[in-house]
Image (cartoon, rainbow, N blue to C red):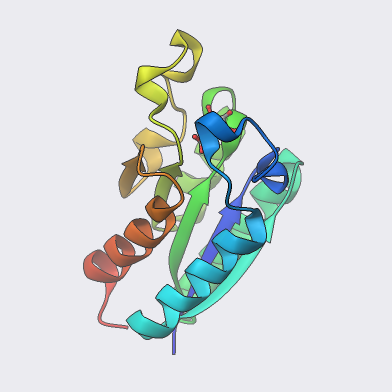
Length: 151
Ligand code: DQA
């Protein structure tokens, strides 16, 4: 059974307590449980990782790329948090590792501050899910499986 990596970037460990009007009340543990349940339904294994450190996220993308080549990983569902709007290094990591990435944002970043309107992840992503709250992670997993399956 191939695996989907659910990767969360900076400050997403604070979900549930962080700006609940924008991000809702679900915690990161709730999100990871949602993803595990979706994985069981979709027939993929799920591995969840969160880091506040850009380099750790880059290493996780590289590792996912190696595992995609090896056939054990289908791709990555990635909420890069604020690094979305700043990180050329994450853009380059996704391109370099040739890993299918579905970019996720809980909030509709395009309805928010102008500095959230640009994403360095989007041009390297296979798909984008924005503004569906934490359900976006499940939609992204489904999209990844539809686009890159059969599992
Ligand atoms: C976010 C949107 C980003 O602009 C923000 O920096 C986050 C969360 C979202 O899921 O809506 O940390 O990626």
